[in-house]
Amino acid sequence: MPFGTKRRAYFKCPNGIHDSESKSLAMITDKPNHVVECHECGGKNRREDLSGRKFGELDVLSFDEKKSRESGSSYWICRCSCGNIISALATKLKSGNKRTCGGKTSHLSRTDIDFTSDDPAEIKRLRRSGLYLQYRNSVIEKDHGRCIVCGGTQNIEVHHLYPFATHISDRFDVNNGVCVCAKHHSNTIKGSFHNIYGMRGNTPEQFEYYVNEKRQELGIKEPFDVYKYMNPYDADDMEIDDSMLDFEYYE
Image (cartoon, rainbow, N blue to C red):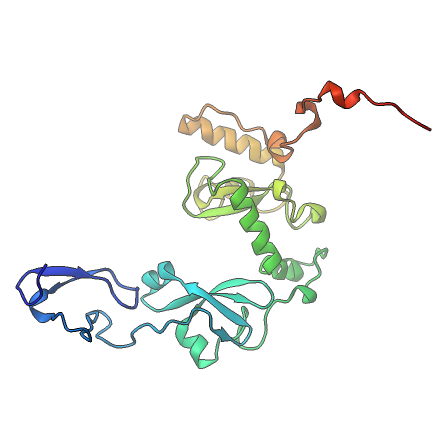
C-alpha cells in the first residue's frame, strides 16, 4: 500500500496498551526515521523496554500486555528474589517505590514463613509465597488449565480437596489440587462450590457430589470420582508383569 495516499491503515500502539487505530497514509511518509505515534498516548510516554532489568529484588521478565490493556498503564511481569511472580507498574519500578513483591522494602522470603503453621496470618503469607505459586502452576499444568466441572479455561483457580488450612501434609500435594473456574469455585458467585458449602471444613466427598451435580446440569455424562482423581496410580489398577514375580530369594 503506497504512502502519501488518502487510504487508511491500522497501526498498533507502540506502548502495546491500546487497540489498533486507523490512520491516513497521507500523513505518513516512507522516510526511515518517521515514527507513527499513538493517538491515545498522544505521542508521549513511549514504552521503555524494561525486560532483563533489575529493580531492587525484582527481575523484569516480560511486558504484561493483558493487564496493561485493561488498566491503560504499562505493567511488567517480575520475579522477586523470594520466588514470587508479580505484575508491577512501570512508573513504580522506575521511581523506586516498587522494589520487592510486597512493597518498597518488605517481601515474602521462604525463610520467613513457617510452612507447617496453622496460624491464620502465617497461612495468608504462605499463600502468597513463591512455593505456593509453583504449586498452583503445577496443578494447572496437570489439569491442562481446564475446569474439572465444565472444561472451561477462563478464570481458572486451584481448589484444595483436603483444606489447605487444616491438612498440613497435603498443602503442596499436586494430587490434592484441582482446577476449577471462578464460576464454579468462588464463594461470591451464586451456585459455586464455596457459595454452597462455605469456606471451612470442606471435604472431597462434598466436591465430588458438587461436580457430578453440575456436570449433570451441563449434560456431561462422564462421572467424577474424587478418590481416583487423587490417586491416579492406585495399586488396584496396576498391571503386574508375571516376569516380575520370577525371582529367587537368598538369605
